[in-house]
Image (cartoon, rainbow, N blue to C red; front, side, top):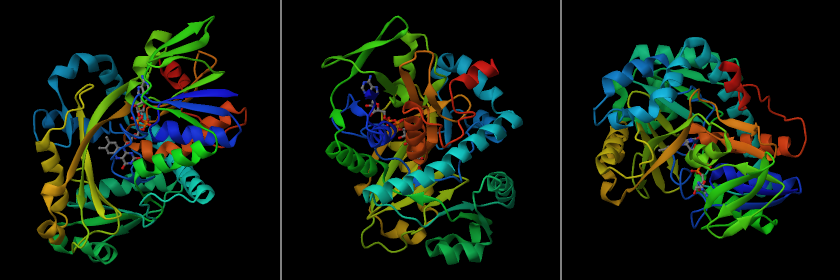
Amino acid sequence: MKVLVIGGGVIGTTTAWCLRQDGHEVTVLDRASALAAEGSFANGGMLHASLTEPWNTPAAIRQLIGWIGRENSPLRLHLSQLPNLVGWGMGFLRYSQAHHHRHSTRVNTRLARYSQRMTRLIRERTGIRYDDAQRGIIKIFRSRRELDEAARSAALTAELDVRHEILNVPAAIDLEPALAGVRKELAGAIYYPDDESGDACLFTRRLGEIAERQGVCFELSTAVRRIELRRGAIHRLLTSSGVRQADCYVLAAGVDAPLLAKPLGIHLPIRPVKGYSASLPIAGCPGVPQVPIIDERHKVVMTRLGERLRIAGTAEFAGYDYSIRQQRVRTIIEQALTNLPQLAQAVDRDCASSWACLRPLTVDGPPILGRTPVPNLFLNVGSGHLGWTFAAGCAHALADILSGREPALDLDGLTLARYRRCG
Ligand SMILES: Cc1cc2nc3c(=O)[nH]c(=O)nc-3n(C[C@H](O)[C@H](O)[C@H](O)COP(=O)(O)OP(=O)(O)OC[C@H]3O[C@@H](n4cnc5c(N)ncnc54)[C@H](O)[C@@H]3O)c2cc1C
């Protein structure tokens, strides 16, 4: 089959590679001049089944109110965005109810575990490396209450095969000696041995090169302007480089997906949530963590990617605003480095490269995969804060659907149909 994939981020590129393995004739269209130039460019680098809770936890909703207007809060709501968030925001609140939230966590966890297996499979089949590491991930806590709360969530995901170990402070420091300087401030940690890390941009670009050698065509600097229907099915795409046609179309356009789907009468409940990262050169520095760290209090992550430390965090409801506020970048750098005092002394903050981008967040948390009411349009959208983790799993599941196989992944809670059921 001839397939056009709209979007060359980690999701679209991995989907294209999988579809090619099934023998489809695949073209990827992206408006940027390189793959992974937007949401997949400089993310936190974590492939984790350990952080699969959707963001609308009851606790986060309570905290969000207190965080309004605070510059250093991890979650920020711009008051100017309230009108754009009214309907979606009500849904976000509704899905924060305990039973919905538990269900979405399970759906995400199942997908993340499957995706971790599929990421390994891609690594084995292609031999690609992407500053990847298989050292697990450690989550650190500064209060007993936060640790106990996280231990309860870990017990829920353990039922879905996510292994974890609760560590006291000496055990946490044994595992990651770079934390020794904050020994007195920690209450404990949770270690997830099966989690991994790696550079999503390197992965996407290297997989793209392999896919291209295998016959996938990448049309970059090509923006899809409109999707035209005829008799209920997609007839053609109008792009900045002319008309494109195929048998099937996969929408993998990140935060732009709802804008492209809306004129087709398809409502995708996705909103952009801005995040920041900083990449610090660490060659020769002492006190560099080897195990990726999540600081639960500040909601920042620290991941070693080769000779860089990637620090990422913050969530801002700021609409389609890609601007970089240096103050936010400085905040996450300092919050991260408080955990790593030895590195904090040595590292050159002026050499940090900063980045901001938008996560495509669904109203309930899990991404949206598979069929739509338009018979030749398929979705791989809305992966939110977990798109790197989910990419390989979503791509394999979509290839199963498009190639007419029974998906190896249970799609319950992942299709567009779930919203119709919930009303
Ligand atoms: C600060 C931050 C930290 C993160 N950390 C992690 C992490 O540690 N682990 C994790 O799993 N996830 C993380 N994420 C989330 C993850 O990065 C995203 O979910 C993922 O990159 C989304 O991939 P995507 O392919 O759907 O979107 P994108 O990478 O944004 O790709 C969409 C592509 O579509 C193209 N496009 C859009 N509209 C059009 C059009 N009209 N025509 C042509 N092309 C178009 C864009 O150019 C873009 O290349 C993080 C995100 C942020 C912002």
